[in-house]
Amino acid sequence: MPPDAPVIVVAALLGSVLGSFLNVCIYRLPRNLSLVRPGSACPSCETPIAWYDNVPVVGWLFLRGRCRRCQAPISVQYPLMEMAIAAIWGGAAWWYGVTWEGAAAAVFLTLLLGIGVTDAKHYIIPDEFTWGGLGIGLVLGLVRGMPELLQALLGAAVGFALLYGIAWAGERVFRKEAMGGGDIKMMAMVGAFVGWKGVLLSIFAGSLLGTIIFVPISLKTKALVPFGVFLAVGAAVSLLAGQPIYEWYTGYLHGP
Ligand SMILES: [Zn+2]
Image 1 (tube, rainbow, N blue to C red):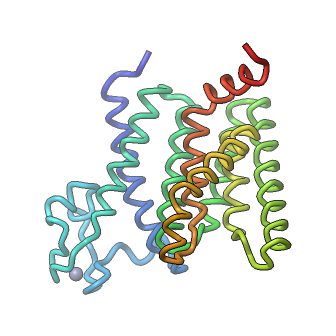
Image 2: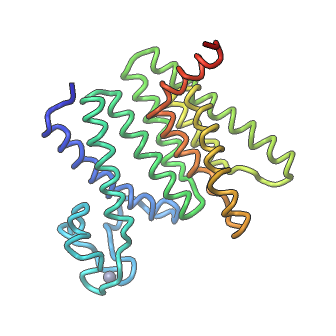
């Protein structure tokens, strides 16, 4: 039974605040800036942003997407990210109720969105998301019980080893770095949340999407492939649709 509306609203509000913090992470982590100091400021005129202008979504709407002092535009990424993370946390509370499973799903999707956007913008997957996320994933496994912890440890080991192997083989074949260390650490984190089957599905779905969507673009524009973006989408598919896909695949192997 889904929880009462107030619970979902509180989860969504918490998500909007986390989304606001995620925006800070996406801006500062690739630049090696501190996450806590100084407080948020306008990138153009460096005026500190007042708390009432920094309220998730509402602040941006009230300012109509411009700095109060210098009128420089503030990216629409800020309110969009806050709304997306609010939807993720509210949705997780609605779907899973107030459970460790729901917390794990919400944290995982938050990390994936942070990784996807940072990789797309800066071609970097920060350790805070990967190693930090791995730590959170293992702790969430531990509080859920011994089978879940073992599943998380196995998943992390498979994710790390598999991507490490692919990167190693890619370097031998293409004689250049085929995959960044960030992708390897990322899949260790993914494995801690979705297990070893989820790792396989994430890589398969991510590679498929990357090939269909990005290869045609990159052939034309010679753009680098932010593979983390596609792995993040694949990992989200593993979390949200993994179970029916595994069941379909097992039935397919065993025949009608
Ligand atoms: Zn300004």
